[in-house]
Structures are given as C-alpha cells and as structure tokens.
Length: 208
Image 1 (cartoon, rainbow, N blue to C red):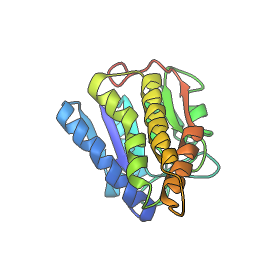
Image 2 (cartoon, one colour):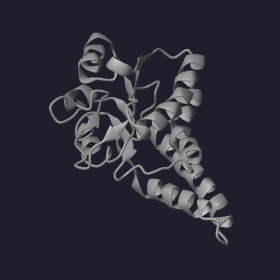
Image 3 (cartoon, rainbow, N blue to C red):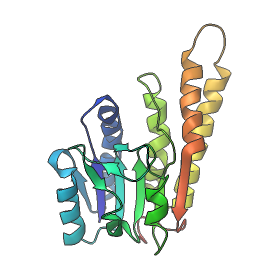
Image 4 (cartoon, helix red, strand yellow):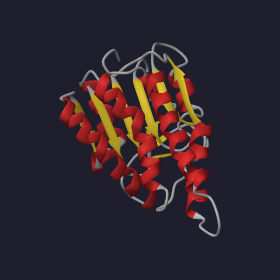
C-alpha cells in the first residue's frame, strides 16, 4: 500500500497540496491501493497507526522539512518522521517534496536495509510565478513510477529531464526587462542541484 501524506497550513503547503492532487488522481486511476493522509491524518499519530496496521511499501510526502534535515513536518507543525521513528521507513520507497528532506533523514533511512529515498538536500524554493513549472518537475518522477512502475533512479532521471527541459525554455526567454523567466530558471536550477537519491536505486512502487 502507498501512503500519500500532504499538509496544508501555510502559503507554501497550500501550493504543494495542490500539486499532490495530481498524484492522488493518478493513484486513483491506476487502481493501486493507497491511503490519503490529509488534515488530522497528516500527523504523526495517524501515520504511525497506518504504518503499523497496514503493509505500507511506499511513502509520498508533500510538505515541509526542517533546515537541520532531520524531520518531515505534519499538519500540526510537529514531526511526522524524525530520528525517533525512522525505523518505520526502513526498506520502503520514499519520495519527499520537502526542503532538506534528503539531507540527513534520507541518508539515515537508507543506511541499512533495501529502502530508497528521493528528496532534496536544500531549500525547495518556488513562487506564485514558478509554481506550475515546479509542479511539472516535482511530480514527473512519481507519475512515471505510477504509470509504468519505473525504478527510483529512473524516476529521479525523469525529474532531472523535466527540469532541464524547463530550464532550457526559460533560458531562451531571458532578455530585456522581463524578470520572470530568470526567476523561474533560478528556482528550477536550485531543485536540480539539490535533488538526491539514497539507498536501493532499483526499487519500484511494485517491488517496494
């Protein structure tokens, strides 16, 4: 089963929550079993119960990380995952659309076992101007995993490919006094630099 966790409590998470609707729709159409954790469900207590009651193989997270890189933050602003319950993520496939998620938590999660963690080592930056292009990039890897069961590294490469395509378009539009292409380009470049994968890169949604 897939656990889709998505918070929605400030400007940034309201946007990432909108992005996650695309993933929810894709999961629904695919017929893959999943649990949608939103509101009070996007909290440590509910998520831990789901992970102990069900055979969760994959975790998809849309929300905030923390600068120290040690937690994913829930709807109640407290950690859903940190060093105290990281054992729950062992051997799983995880994709975290969250700042600093791949910095320490991702490394520790996959230090033993067969798990795979895709995340971002730095700040996941976007704006109202760049949000649509950022969504296309951030979601591209998961959508590919859902549609054809690709591996973690193939999903990562799909994100990188989309980022490069979007950056190329924006680079060609940078001229004169129009700052928007440059802003979008800079945001996408940061994501490209910070995108990381840890652990078993050949893991898939179906083999997880």
